[in-house]
Length: 321
Image (cartoon, rainbow, N blue to C red; front, side):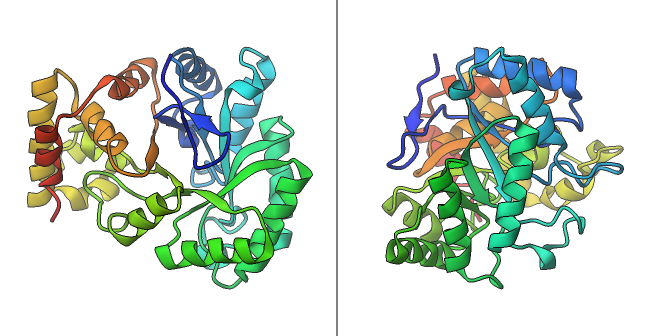
């Protein structure tokens, strides 16, 4: 059984790797998603991350497809609801196709979309409900009051934030203390071995000091850290070409070389080393990673069996620019 750790001061105990549900109902159809979820839980893991907008970016999709798949899986009854930790998000507009200028964390928007998420997930509570993107147009007091309302109603157990800066996260905690609202206990930032500057430093230090559990997204840098993409020729026909192309530079090659060295030393894969490095970082509860077939999932789950030495960590850390 995979060792679980508590998130902040809460009773939310999670294993050190989260399944990214953005693939459910998209690159993994419902049948494959069920297989992957069963494999994930049977291996001793429990945190499943999704959002109400997944996968609205796919032609013909409206958003909510991922939540729907997870709900159908839960309905089968092969796993007890209390044995999994469901994370979903609110704030990015489904109706306006990811128009970030129309993101909203208003009370009206939060209360409307939480019920839609609960219906799709076929559950009466969400373990961790995240503000998906900061909304500076809505007062934090309004946003947090709405979240607090959901916690008191039993629809949500804990709340967190995604894509918040240190200053806004700090302001949110101050607001919660002032009004005795439920507080953010988790943060979901963009962070991986290639993209480090946005999180490392004051934001990471603040999370550690305030016992805010961190779950990283794009943990494998859109697949770049798997080592699959090493030249522009490797990007031909890939849906990730635009995301990965900018990493095919000197620093990117340095990162891959370090991953290769450590992976060879530990008889592991670059993906496993990249995820193990995240797990070893201060404040990180679990990196989020996705898989679309059982082989991929088995590989990434193996990251939790890897212990990086100080020399391994030093080599990997030296790749920061």
